[in-house]
Image 1 (cartoon, rainbow, N blue to C red):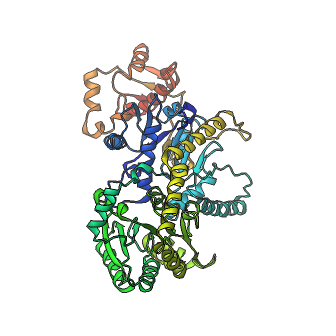
Image 2 (image 1 turned 90 degrees about the horizontal axis):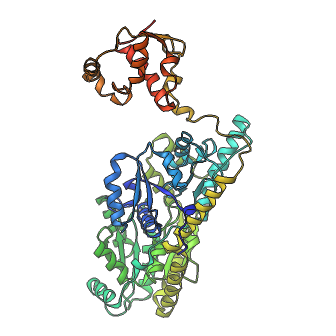
Image 3 (image 1 turned 180 degrees about the vertical axis):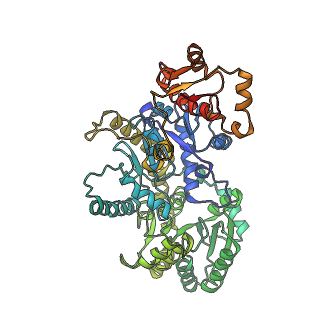
Length: 556
């Protein structure tokens, strides 16, 4: 592994939803996040890890995730308001593509304190697409990056960015767009997790009732015809192979999780109708023992994905790590990972031309169709070549030597290109480069003119026109007598006030003001606050208004 350096370090934004595989509805981004965290733990230097909590309540989940990742080293846990501390790492990794909001939050502590590094997973939802358009107007800088997990994902991101840029040119005459870098770095796999011995393989095949060298085809992943891979082309292709090879029993293991019983029933119906001569085996992808058995028993891996829901697809590189030849669709990230004719076969896909889905996008936008229905309709209009799939399966089903050769090529590629030890090195190299650019790139257009997003501005600026007057430095404030601590605390602790303790100064915090008023009961605001540190000055300036509200102080 490449030696760890401080320049190649990054803090990571933690939310259990982004790094855990223990949820009821397992998504590919969660598997990728869990693998990424293991890689981060394995590559941590003596300075340890730095984690920014998305919410302070996430601290126990972070500890559990790090324990599951096998990490026992030091970790600095930052609460959401401690952004400035990320400067120690120099970069903040986000397990998502949304950089706009984190960029505005960074502006509060300084744009050059650290870089931002996000990653694409699903980019088809409204929330993500809107987040991509915001990259052209948010204060992202050239020392930030949005990692695209595949060339197909980068092409899709660029389509959105170019369309938004075209609109801003027309609407505002905009001519300067400062965007994050868009490097392509794949997701990774811990290849050692996919090593299965001969005894484990034999036991798994026996449990399935596989006799001798009968071939086992494996699909692993979410069992969703509308949001992952429609089973129709796979079932038809295997049924054709079964008809052509009546003396060879073909086993199909579908390993994954169904979102609900209706989807489970739909898969079972399709299996009965479309592939009656194939022997079907369900396997619970949420059960580790069942998951390992499914992988150990397999001879061929397949995933004929046809969905815009994903951008990379982890399971083909897991299959390569397991030494299985792949039959996959020529689709999204699969086009990067599986080399056609080397690690397996990529089956051609066909989709309609641009402009054919305007009505579907409109229905999704209007809320007439939800996201699942939107994706499901789109996948029905993406064709996977059934003839080509059947031919690919036939070649592998009839040639054990070809299966072995392709599986060995895939295993070597997985270890060399996709093992997390290799992939995390690419991230570290990116972080080091971003660190260097952040430190040395000249700012030709000046710094950001504001520290807060216009739609998240200081409420006392936005609503300045509501009040009769704004407290000013020259205003004279009169305190007839300094109250006792007991009297002050009695008012501050009233139920109608104590919920807001964080913004109401306690008695000791007001000590500099008490001293000033003790010298003279009437003082200008400027005098009361003179010489205080910036943070204390701002806090007590607000506190003066509360003292007026509570009746201790009067405007003279």
